[in-house]
Image 1: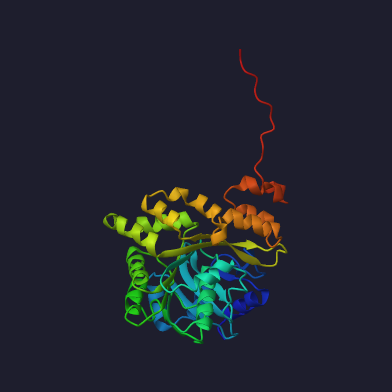
Image 2: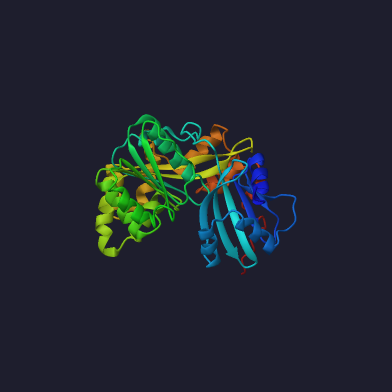
Length: 369
């Protein structure tokens, strides 16, 4: 058994989402969004390097020795599966282990809006799941693939960095390919996938112009493309895609978004009302003629008003979703306040008043004559 497995076993038993190991501090667990140290000494440089070396392949050790970060999946001897990032910092090495549940989640278990399930009924176009790091984008996409796999007869090609949830083929065939192991880049993976008779292509991250361009081509040519971006809202997602591609392709990109972008689901993870977990709360954009026109005329700043008025189509602003969840008593109002855009609307729900902005109670100075 690798020595690092003892820390991973402890984290799994505690129900944490991540295990952090870094030189100069004790091991830490991410519990319901908070980072907490475990009772252990500060990790020493040689000690942690030894722990990590035990779980790396020869090629991974060589790659890391050249000064590169590593991203890979790891199955511990205790049975837990983890997404791993190994890196170097000023005091030595560090590693983050993201726990991956052994069973693929369902859309129902994630308590996502019903519209997310209906997005799986499309046969062509692009659906983007966005949010900052650690907001459950991969989990939502895994649940969508699980739904497609169970309900439709498709050829699903999933391009990941690294492979996280492992899908067994059911009604569909699910082919999972890993960046660096099976494909050199996401762009090359999409290019290859289009020659493999796909119905659905999942792109782990639209991280560069070439990948975005290839994904757009796949969506335009009769495939359902699912992908992620590290953006924190529907408008920012659309602007990021337009800005990522060359200026001479700007009109073509706007036309693609207006015609082939089906939806943008932006999510945050908010503590539950009982404080014993977190759940996804989503902002949702569904493409309509009105939103398509705003994109083509570069008036994306007006899109939020369309989301606010589009509840009957499944759309919602993040603030609307947060307020609804607070009213339903499913999330912690204090944590919701942290994620809200218009925080004034949430102040009356906050229980920890130290979070609220301090008002200046000093009387105004008298005007000088």
